[in-house]
Length: 409
Ligand SMILES: Cc1ncc(COP(=O)(O)O)c(C=O)c1O
Image 1 (cartoon, rainbow, N blue to C red):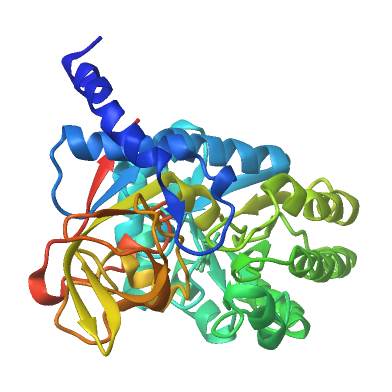
Image 2: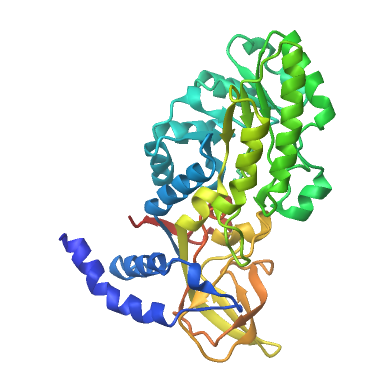
């Protein structure tokens, strides 16, 4: 046993005490949350003497999530969406498990390549890219790109011998998507289904390779039906194109697979069952099927530990100030429209309180109406599902210390 492991074991009794008393802040059954992950995070915080906010990354959970999704959608290859969380150890784990990447910028290409990816296996999924980004991506060896309009296709005229293009369409209307997903991705991107064939013809006329079709139902999707709509549209277009002698090599069903934050979501096997059935019954076996999961792979693999650094009572309501906030790891409260479960070791009366971040800005409030037990300066709060769209969108506002990431296994 290493000295480090020894010190971890010595830390455990403290953490166990804390964990036994942990309670959900809102009425919620947390029995299915894997408390081993909190224990590990708390152990590392103690042993490494971490005083500031810290994100604890579990590579084991990344592997488990990849395997669970692979088993739920066996014929569908995984291109992890780097945008969700680009930590080098996470990306390396994805590559080691034999999966590929979805990237949307030259810097993401470099990050995926550093993790071991071959650029030719990357998919550039950004529907609207600058000429410079396209040139950089091609110079770095990327060959597969997405488009959703004629002007974007024209940008590839000078690279017609080097690239192949997927047409991204809207599986559902923006309004339908908004009702069933946390982040509506049909608002900004994706052509209408009736525009697909014209775009395919445009690609062919320009002498560029047409690779296939892509859709993204929106992120944190709670309704598998949305995928079924996308698959149905794709199946119809694939068979029509077939009659014109045009082959569709790839169907990309995007990301969107949900994780449990505050509300219950179906497990991945249950969620994917109808998608799996639709793919096998509607999509010809010669079509290569791929997915671009981000959130499902990374969210549950990161636990955030933050500290109460100040408190006050404002108009009779307790306020607690944390060392991380909206400008930091909680940026997803704004950009990702996400609510995160919080856990504490205190367990007395619960009163409506405000939980604020550390910056000077008044917008930096994480929750302004949350039931909390009385907290003390120095208390640690645990946020268990903080691995997607959290620290990637954090800023350096106020030049405060950002949460560091600790790899725990
Ligand atoms: C093009 C594209 N692919 C994949 C993803 C990842 O989606 P998710 O994290 O919902 O799986 C996103 C998220 O914004 C995206 O825009």
